[in-house]
Image 1 (tube, rainbow, N blue to C red):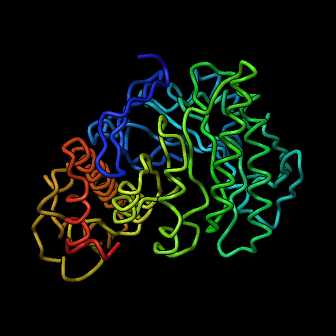
Image 2 (image 1 turned 30 degrees about the horizontal axis):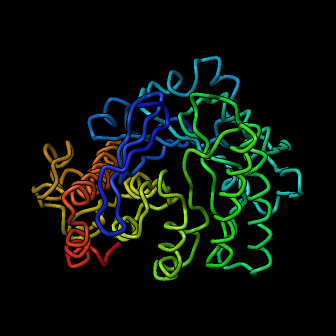
Image 3 (image 1 turned 180 degrees about the vertical axis):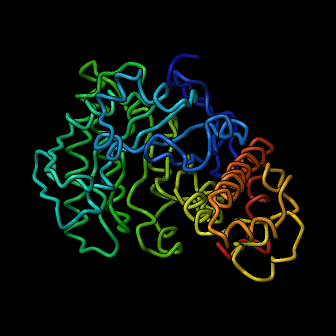
Length: 381
């Protein structure tokens, strides 16, 4: 198969099982991507990520551009050599981080100026500069520069974010030249279905014009601007129709979502890829995912509980360590507690996505989703 070929191996309802070729290997969907913001998944080594079944690791353009600098990453041989992770990697554009700094951001038609959180310096990003940075970092997949609107927001503000994101998508696609790196477009539009569908329409028109001129196409489509404060029910009022408006022949990536129940439901609506800091961030706070829901490992009920975190789990943490021991580590603020919980929580989501894929391949995703929604833990996420 050629680089960035996407093959649909099976469908079950709207759920899909895809394979996607990158320069660092093939990944298969449905899939969850651990987040390695600064080119590291906190507390988890590259070899452990492979052992857990990780297929793609996400790194953050904003943070790597600020520290140590994209030129340093490039001098090291790119983000794979720099981080020691040899599987497929993805960089988000950093747009979410930039626009979360609302008080320091100045936006115009040409790009965005913002203040670094590291040293207070002023930084200017155009779509072309963002592409240059992501090409230097060298992940297998880069994301276009976009504007992510918060929730709630006035419709006029969300509509303007769609305008900026669409214009920048066109410039990113024209500027992006690295042949071993795919570029994904990003759908915006907040909770407004018509704006979402207009965003998809513009991305497809941009791609058609590029191809007609002998240029490139988008390697996939990110769906941004969800999970920014709205309820899950509000998200699902529009998500399915938006996902299915994206092209059939490439991955659909719901950005920033790591809630297990949301993942299961979104796969059933046609989404293929997910990422989130949730499993590792909550792990460092002492929270474990389980088949019966979230577990606060600071609770006294675990002080003499010598069973595994989750009796149904095959991860290294559950195979070797007890709830009592992990509670002890968490209560003592030992870093090992966060490491063991991170390993467990990542395994939980990676395994959930693997089982979802098996269900699609078996033509039984509806049954899989129904079983999850009826499970004891489904409503706790």
